[in-house]
Amino acid sequence: MDKLMIEGGHPLEGTVQISGAKNSAVALIPAAILADSIVTIDNLPEISDVQLLAELLKEIGGEVELGTHEITVNPATMISMPLPNGRVKKLRASYYLMGAMLGKFKKAVIGLPGGCNLGPRPIDQHIKGFEALGAQVTNEQGAIYLRAEELRGARIYLDVVSVGATINIMLAAVRAKGQTIIENAAKEPEIIDVATLLTSMGAKIKGAGTNVIRIDGVDSLKGCRHSIIPDRIEAGTYMILAAAMGQKVIIDNIIPYHVESLIAKMREMGVTIEVEDDRLLIHNSGEKKGIDVKTLVYPGFPTDLQQPLTSLLTQAEGTSIVTDTIYNARFKHIDELRRMGANVKVEGRSAIINGSTKLQGAKVRASDLRAGAALVVAGLLADGITEISGLEHIDRGYANLEEKLIGLGAKIWREKMTEEELDQVKN
Image 1: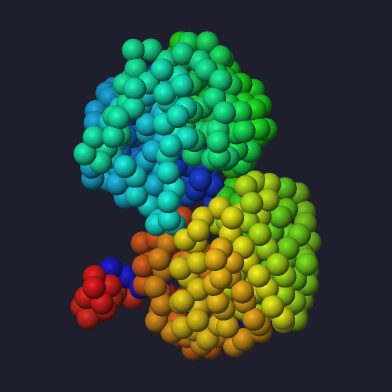
Image 2 (image 1 turned 180 degrees about the vertical axis):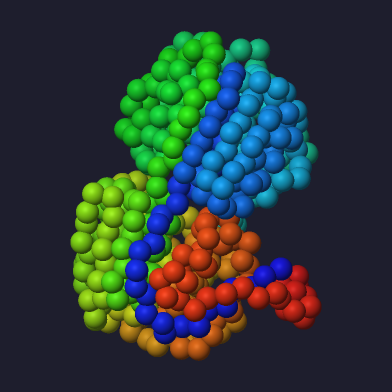
């Protein structure tokens, strides 16, 4: 097992290319199950979640070729094979296999998903949607069993705005009989991306990106080629890294509209940002001032960016308050930042940051994907060397992190963990 080593204090300069969106890729790959012929998805991020999904599609009989930035899936030989254990449990987004396999085969057995531990993230809205479409859903020995004689369109109101439930119901509904209407649907760009793929396959979907999505079921879907949108969370992370340590950094291959909430907050801090068609230029603007941030569903400020932003706010003058309304367990990085000298405390759903404070390199652990990103930001800011363990979380969502940061001038590398360090992690 590796740990990430960062020597802080080195300024960043140059251009970084943003990869395809992780949160699109993990839904688009299962969506390929629904086709009857070959689906090719490009602009694919090189992350461990993609590799896991490729292996899962092979497990159910698919022919899968995974290249550097491209996956080709031939679903013609797939069967509705149960996936109660193994890889499926390592992956939060494995729940998209439920909607895709239910839509294609009218049955599925999927182990309850894993991924980052961010507190309760129930799939009750997914199940509510599947049942409305006519499926029987039971939880047996830690796996979800889905069975349907046939799927029929329905009007489904989501009690909570949920990206996962919106996409999962779309996947199940595209091959149902009649019309499905999803009300109080999530509006994230990744939902539009999935709808674009399904439409290219022959699905009839209207309203993706709004709070009401209408789906007219079709009998079959064909293969197609699709290019994933840029990753707005990766883009936002590099924007924060550039604001923390950049002299002049260009964030390339992005859709600026998707990161508008972050642009607004960073400008409020005093960061200079120039916006172009598909890239941003961030200048070192000197002193930063504290701000208040509240995470909200899209197009509000993303919960996935509050953790890295918290690290940047340790360098802002005055008091900042970051409130997370989405996940109640998303402040596990705060103890690690305190270990590095940050003046931060958690009160309920808010982190209160008093800045600016000089951070010191330390041994820290990433508890989840975006906490890992927060510690990378902190490590670049800190004096001395920071050692980050829990690297498997970071590898789930950031493609070629070291190469990209080294290209900007960071001093960052991997080292094997010692036996003693591995024992500490296990305990």
